Picture 1 (cartoon, rainbow, N blue to C red):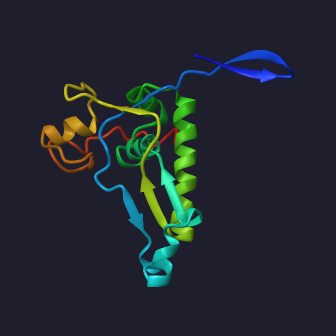
Picture 2: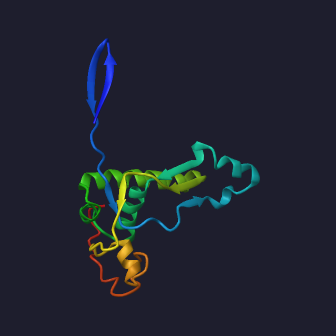
Picture 3: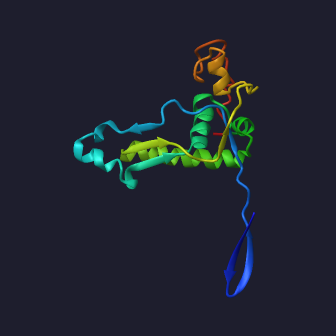
Length: 158
C-alpha cells in the first residue's frame, strides 16, 4: 500500500505496516459506564466533553477480561488473541491506565473501536466467550457453571 508524498519536489513512497488484527471472543454486553456521582444536570453535559470521556478499545477490554476475569497469564492471553506477549502487555497497560483514570476522575467510559476480529461460532478456544455462552457456562465467570473454577492458579506474568 503505497502513499506518495512530495517532499522538496521529490516523490517519496511511504509503506504503512499492515494492521495486526487481534482475536476477540465476543463483544462486551455493556459498553458504556457513567460515574454515579456525576449525574447532576450540569455535569450530565460534561460527559460529552472529550476530557471526561475515556475510550477503551474492544481488544483492551478482551485483554482485561482474559487476564483479570479468566485468570490467564499474558502468554496464554497472547495465544488466544493470536498476538505476541509484548502486544498483550502494551494493551493491558493501556487498559489499566484508562480504567484507573475513569475510576479516579469519573466521567464516562466507553468500550468501542480497535483492530479486532470476532471468533466464529465454531471457535475451538476453551475460554472463548462465544463458546462458554453457547455451552451454558455463562459469560466467562470462573467458579460458576459446568466445570469452571478448576483453574490454572498461575498468578504470574501479569
